Image (cartoon, rainbow, N blue to C red; front, top):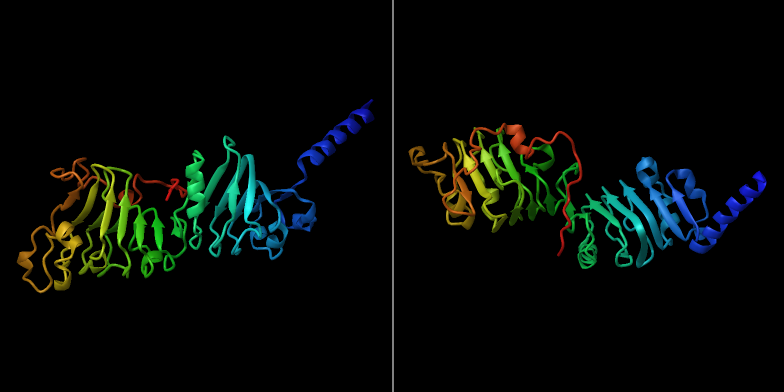
Length: 333
């Protein structure tokens, strides 16, 4: 009787495999010794073995498998995931692609309307996610966390390559002392309590968008005793805010002045008009030692009573987060 039960159990497994195909599980390097031609679906998880993500045989194994049950890829050196144009996902599929610095191409993902699929795509700074964002929006996928195209996030190790940064940009952070390619920031920009004389090199920065905590401004430049110039902010053309949120706070920077060539620029006229022009007498410095907060709603300086009440580090982190985690909205084009 026991043998009969065992026989029936294995028979049912074989029937399931014949009906749905063979799903190959890859969580260790040794699993790459399977024959990929026998795999009709893939269950990949490199989070369990960091060496798996950089194994030279990984791409050859996964390149022609056209269905994903689970696809968790972190820290690889792959430039693309597959030779196929389309990857099919099943109900319950998970696709998590993070921290792949060389990744430039992902396939089109296809799934049935109504199927539940999970997407997390973050920290892949060479990756264009435009088409994936469109697909997620069109199929109304809930809970997706997908980076903007070519975006860097909080877990980046350096920033020289970043065109877009999502998250808090702390300018005195050693990662951020040179930002030659940076064009847009989706988060806060902060320089507070530093010894810098000038801001990091950001010649292409044009846009800052801040839609979160109302109590914290999009840009904070304060309490920097040696700061002489904010010229790198002068070319910002667009600050996008949620209603009622503060634009810019510039205060308590005793050596700060505005270069004559920047005095007529839009950013300076809107947000730094209280800072003296370089070469003028220090007595002309009007509000450089006082609160200067600009809001999208007029007449609401310091509406939340936060002046002097938020510790420097807590303010930098927003609400004092102690851990690091991905915090990406679904950003649709």
